[in-house]
Image (cartoon, rainbow, N blue to C red; front, top):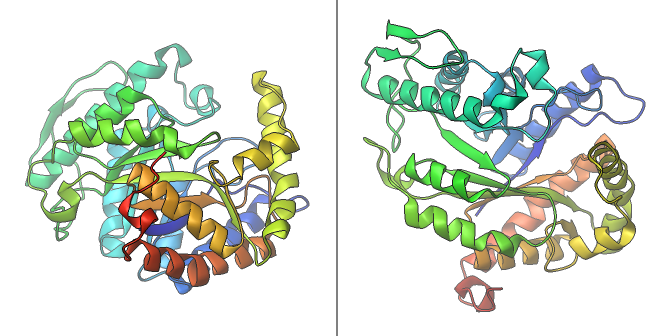
Length: 361
């Protein structure tokens, strides 16, 4: 089980975007120091978030680390140029020795559509076409070929040589480390599987065990990409959602709640959802719920139990939702790496009811 964190650069009250960005990089460095495996950098175009250009922040984070993988979480591909995205991540992958990851998705907000001249009515078609082009670029780059392509939403390519072509990384060849993010749409699971790509399920609430059928569907439909061998040619499931670790379980719940509540209230008000409350918060943070909030033992137990149900191999947590103060985030990251991860590793490597899958919900 790989563990990590992801962030949209939630701005702490009283701070500015520049300070927040510097704090994000400090958290990335700490994540590597405490043994975590991955940091995801999100994209939003709203005043409460500091990260609008994930590739820029990913590049900065990779330059300040040596081992940890850093990727977008997500790149809103619908409003990007796949050619430029391919070039950015191929460049970062080469500079970092294969540690850059590109997670493509539609995104959970729509501000990027008018900002970059995209029509929201083309929501589904934009993603389908741009993902198709990105995969075509990845296929061409893997064998060093030129590409001819034509679609609706960008100018055609005629015998185009798109550079740089990725270095040869053991296990995945000359391909990007590319995955697809979804909130749980079955079609997205099939799309990722048939493209031979990792899938990331964003679990915003409810019960993570509800994603087990989607993960099973993804595995049944999985088709390895040409020229890819080893672990990179097998299904890969990541779960992402909210999490927070503190030494004391009750303190973890109390510390995280006001920031969660503020963020969820803003979204609920905008979208006409039911307003969040303490009851739903604590229910979702309970042992069967989606939020991994508690002391190290409780968070580790939830990861292992969820693994028994879903069979995922990476779990990442958003710990800064609503602008959790930077010092609290650093403390939570340290506990995730130094205490939660060893507990998870020990449990999943042992023979027992959770590791064997007994009690799958």
